[in-house]
Image (cartoon, rainbow, N blue to C red; front, top):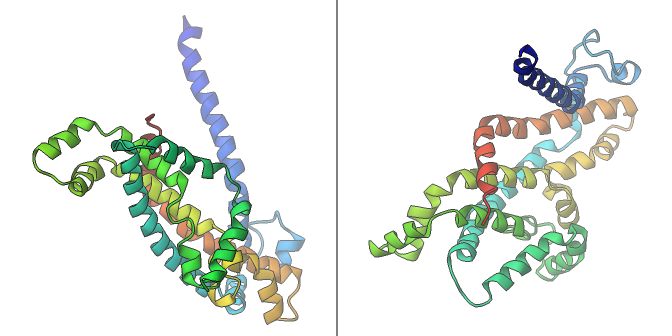
Length: 287
């Protein structure tokens, strides 16, 4: 009898131990990078695993802000994030609402065509999009960074799954009360799908913030470089600004820049983790 009652507790302890080990494995490299950014550059190379006995310095951060245009990268990323994120958060729910709650000829065929774009590798679309941006004279502009992919197939699919769960009876009751079609979406659908919308918002912010492939192609100038592009060319910026910079110096400043770039996403996830989890659950509803 004792063995039977203790078995669930043993399994729970084993699960918690396993999750703790996995969490440690994921967090260890991040913690090492953040702590090492405060070490002298030579100590990072000579004693990489000596985290707490080495000297504490802000030299890496000081030189990084002098050598790397990270402020311009943050500004460009913020502009793209606000504009492109707003288009996604407005356009995707509206498109998904049409697919979920309206019956029109070719609806399933059009939605299937939208889903097919999810299977296309990003690299396949880069050349056609770049040629289009060149024809529009949008290369190295905010338009090129913002408009392509603003309302992507995943966002439409996500919101359609969420909106499908909204009862049709609620919409019919709204129509009987004289509510217009846009009023139905804004007053009835939007409050119900708020958790799924919050989850999409977190994912959208993370995707735009971490996007690298398209920005490095569409905005190759230093003035238009987003944060991820700035980080990718950090070594060249340091070497070009200071000819005497060695490998240790570049490594220290790279760790400092990476730590600074990590802060916004870390704060965002901690602040919105509850909404993110609720949104994941809302998005998992089958349509």
